[in-house]
Length: 137
Image 1 (cartoon, rainbow, N blue to C red):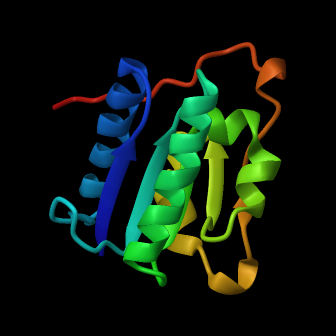
Image 2 (cartoon, rainbow, N blue to C red; image 1 turned 45 degrees about the vertical axis):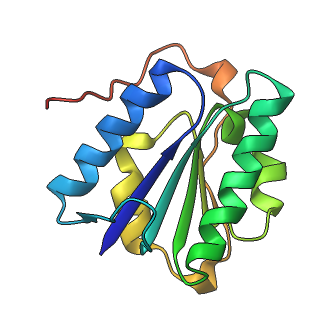
């Protein structure tokens, strides 16, 4: 399966996208060619400004148009803070937010369209530990 990553926002998101890509590649996924069609799209969203929210929504819609059959996963700050809104967007299949990203490959591999939108966003304000997600290369 081919996977594509779209990162909005800060350098932290860029680093986290690298870590997510590493997880997928280690599990046999192939990178989609730049701008090419993928089976899975990961949108690492931003919510620093209203513009970040808007760009995140636009990117989610854009990737679903590229391949309507693809699995679209929304992760990151916008997915975390506006999980209900993201879950209601046409085209989103999995919403992870900022926690549980280490499980992203498992979520994608077990996703079935009959499940509808899988929402794994938890109340981040109750968390007291940082979830490590590292890039080794």
